[in-house]
Image 1 (tube, rainbow, N blue to C red):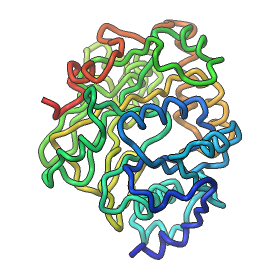
Image 2: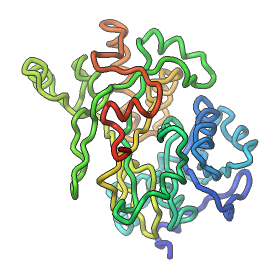
Image 3: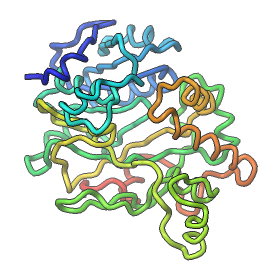
Image 4: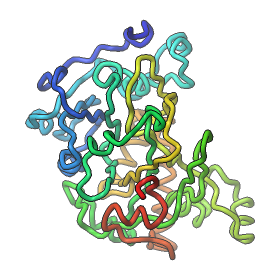
Length: 342
């Protein structure tokens, strides 16, 4: 039975078709102005075997709702509330949430209403999960046993073009072109440990680039300089671990978009391409830092703005000696990013 504190925020209404009772593998997501990603996103996950998409549209103005309304396998929900709203403090306490963010409640509702006791994907529109060639998501879940728990984690791998100039050339692309040259940091990011959270080996390209330009706000300037001089590890910046494949249960709690209180597999790690460095990134930075609708007032986008400005002046290249041009799933296996597919 749904928790009372959770059900009071369930004001979802169906905008497009009602697919509530359609028996198909489900992907759910929260979307806002995602037309840059949605056409390839839907195509990609249909090929992986997703048969039902459930989106909460947070008042998009770029044609997202109209586009999704034309898709026969998509159900769109709306709420009277907004992504950046806060829930009551007493409700957050009752639900055991560390934050009052409404988006955590939306994520919990999507699981409880549409994905109880079955495997489903929970993603954002700029995230593309990779599996071995020819494998569907149902093929993958059919191989999972009880020892894999109820959540499969993914390493979020930021994809980037070769240079800032290449990024600028993408600004006028109405839809992201996944066939253009995209690169990623080709080294092990996370190391699985039995009974423990994965150990961070490499914190990702954003942490690397911010450290290179002395812009990581989580590391003092002197500490950054000492790390460089002594050849120490790059300090962390963003969370690169995310539960993307869940077997939902009543009472599931999202502690953040990157953490759910489900037993996770310590033998499998999926690769998740994350297109943070995309064509309309400057427009997204402006919107995120002025609308107030993003987590922590769009602080992450402020850092991206500083980074891109610094790169424009100092070093146009996103790549480093371990950058790999992406060609497919096997690239992530060779880099030690995809784990459990031997």
